[in-house]
Length: 217
Image (cartoon, rainbow, N blue to C red; front, side, top):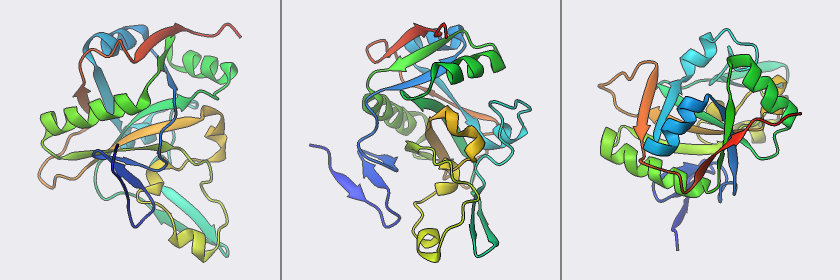
């Protein structure tokens, strides 16, 4: 049985992976280019993008100028927080995402298919293992659903009870249709700068990831 450690900020650490909620969902999907999906399944190649790049991405559907910058309002005053270290993300969606939104995401960046992750827990364990091998502890995988409450009015109790790195998992209500479940990597190394992306290779994952056609409507 997996040992579950609850942190002071309310997250859960299980086998080296940090979760905002545990257990994770039974299934996730991601809209992708087909060549990248095939590469993921056959070789296990995953690219985590720097949140700075998401902030600069001039795409109304996928770009977010506030990505990674958390914000709540209390008594009319804004309380903002960010991350001092580099943060990278790999974005997927809960199975509750609508076909309409899937098609909007696909059209926005010429994506040709979706992938279905039938065992997110197993995927996360493989990523964590690969991170240890490839990056020697520079990163810890942190997973969780995105909260669409950026800028919400809260009281002091809620403000002070936010989970670690809540800013990485917070977006505005205009992105709510994405039903995003995010995988993030924070660069804990003080000596390295990983730039615009981090590649992780987890090996063939055809047993837990399948390519699906885009919905028709």
